Structures are given as structure tokens and as C-alpha cells.
Image (cartoon, rainbow, N blue to C red):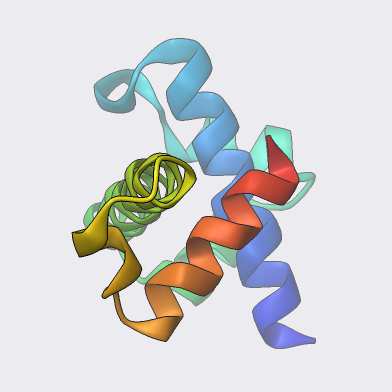
Length: 97
């Protein structure tokens, strides 16, 4: 359950970062989007910097999955040798797209 709420907050942060820009996303904006308090965000992420790092990590993960999915779609030999966890992320990306 704890990770579900953390994921919801991170997803809300991603929505705000896409809408306002990464550098303009505030904890208050994220709290409003997530339907929680500023304090709850800090419970899960400790600081705004940690939340921003999580936003960037997730954005990079999605980007990597998208690139790998494209490589797999065209039969790229390097993409075929990617680790299973990256292939799973690529498959999840394709399911979301």
C-alpha cells in the first residue's frame, strides 16, 4: 500500500512537470494534483530534490523503454540483446502507448 501512494504522488509529479515544466513544478502543485498534503509528499520523498530526482529517473526510464521498443520493433540486434528488465519496460511502454 505504501508504494502505491508513493507511485500516485510520483505520477502526479510527472503530470505537473509535463504541464508546467520540470523546474516550475512545486510541491504544492504536486500535492494538489495527487490529492494529498505537502507533508505526505515529504514523508515519501524527504525533500523536493528527492522528488525531482524521482521525476527525472522515471522520465529516463520511460525514454529508455521507448527507445528500446523502437529498436525491438525494427529488429535491431543490440536491442534484442538488452537485459530482460529493459525488455519488460519496453513491453510495458508499448502497452501504454
